[in-house]
Length: 309
Image (cartoon, rainbow, N blue to C red; front, side, top):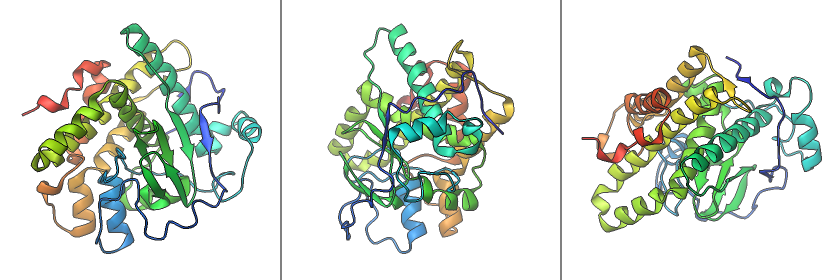
């Protein structure tokens, strides 16, 4: 289902486009930004537990993947200048044709909405950067390869996406639709809010003090990011400028995407069994429910996932 934007203009000023630069080249088994899965057999299992499961061995947050087509210019090793990217993303029909342009536009809307909301609440706000990369890249959280998938790094306050990697996750987990893609951007943006609000460092400190509760804290952090994504959808839909006009089909796409990357759904798909003790993101039902809670409330105060049961 297409996303109906109030304004089709795309601003690439916040984009750090590293595609086509050959990556790091020499990762060779070095640390990954979200690399908590040593010894996992097989690429897809590694991806599930570190991309969708959100391992955070060196401080990365919220790794999960959603479907993004891989045929657009700029995602297959061809470099574009900022001017070329700006021109392409503002050409006729670009938001329907080019996934990277659409993600940049969602990022633009998220930045506008949260900047306004933080100002309304009297809170300081700083925009994150949106990074596109291929193969591998350096981050403030360590070196990341394309198998890391989309994630947020609190150390440098940047959202990282390798677009070419994500088709597999669409095919296997069925999280389809343009607003499913918007949900992934909004979820990672939610992790940025946690950094701005001081939640993320408090959670990491609590995990270090009590490692036995590390997964429980991780689940709460991830569900809160899902809730913030829902709040964003509400606020963006209500915005009078540079917002979006959502249908129930759009919301259903996001709910389905959130459920598709639930720990139980992923473990059942990849292992044929479910181990709740290893959950780091929450169940399919929890993820969908918390997105819905945020969407219905439109209020970040509704997203207290740390004091639930």
